[in-house]
Image 1 (cartoon, rainbow, N blue to C red):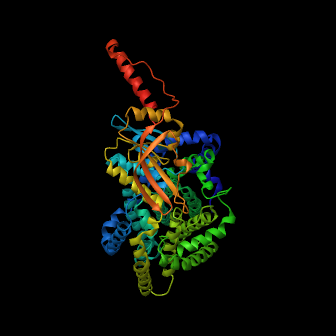
Image 2: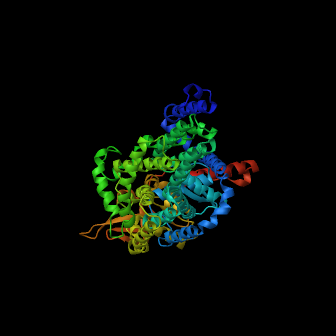
Image 3: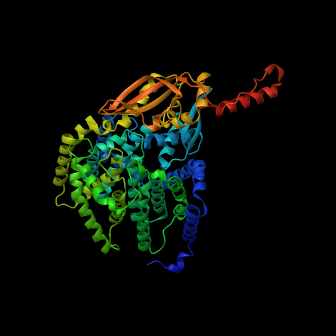
Length: 621
């Protein structure tokens, strides 16, 4: 047992208590929601930089102890290395690279763009090419956590800005995920389990879809695996270096996806278990100050208080609360429809679902048994119990979520942690079966049959991506940009961010409606080579009439000429039109007398030019 009197003689434990109190005060009490969003907007980049640097240092300090043995053992794993390479190729070759889930991926790309150019964390909603330089002129802090866009911004910093860098990051993270899954399988049950885990995860088309997209789902899985492996290290060593690595991994996981903060709680339980085993608090200075590291999560989460629309409950109908037990039956039905779909349109893996639903009850039974003998359990069992509780908590939260329908195109990705849990659960359960090699050959045969009979054809067709027409519509926008490489034009679009992240001048429809005078000024003075409007029409099935939703209607002042259009569903028509006329009317623009440079001093000329540029920027759409 821990000597309570000695706790307060431990400077690191005292620092932990003080930092915990400070984190609660700063994160939840002293800073108002508006100020919290301001702090994240202008400090979010630097917060992520500090957290990432701290994690890199902690991981290096922990891993360097094992480096001498790597050179002696990697050759023994050459077969697994080949398997990982093959599986990685299979995951990234079938689904084309592109934005798969909107608006998530476009928002993340926009935040990465502002982090790269301005070192602030906003999604730009207005952007213009000004004398050859692309300027971000307006935006707001997005609700999505900042770790993934921060990492993409680092790619921009070191390789130059490219919209595709988000896809590069996810492709690299997918390889790293397979490596971590193999390592996890080896630690749980040996090399055969590691190979089986990699192969079983590769049967999941949903992973292939996200591996070639721009979202934060793959990073989330990587961080979950990093937390598990760090938990194994801590459970075995229970020293300052291992606890620091575990804590910073958990903090980074918390700032990867909103709900991933759930994993922090079982990790805290594991650390307490380690303290009880050691008879004293085991802390490094990083872990002692770890509550302060969670302040960015607490501050950023206040976006849901400032903008309740961030929950998007209105998008599905009349929901008044984001989480409720009343949603569970319907969500379970949708989950079963996703996991056991046989059409290939849900990006599921039948073999993984079948084996997973058998394995998870056995894992839960194992957890119950471990509770009764927590003092005597093996370190690997303690780490496995920790991550299992996190997985189960995540799955339970998804079932309580108003939009937790795994078979819907936008929501399928939320099942990825549960799919990963099933992969690990299967290899843990198979390892407990009698026999040494036949059981693994039998599992390999099942995985191979499931992959070639269902998963591979599903990946090849990738209906799950094609059915989501919004993603194909975004790819169509990219076709337009490729066909107009000069980028000297302006596009009016409710989703202006999709043009801005490609460094094309764009402004929302709302601004064009509210300020037609500004639009007319720029159109008349040829500020842009052309001005376009993107619109999505609904088609009346009975009459064939085109109906324009209000969010795409720029108003009667604009005369439009269609130049590009395509139907992505039988009852929608996407169209890009050129603005050929903007009717005269009231204008907020006031004309001043032109300055005569011949009558001005050089200083006055410089001041006049600066004033002109400031006025010009204000008059941009």
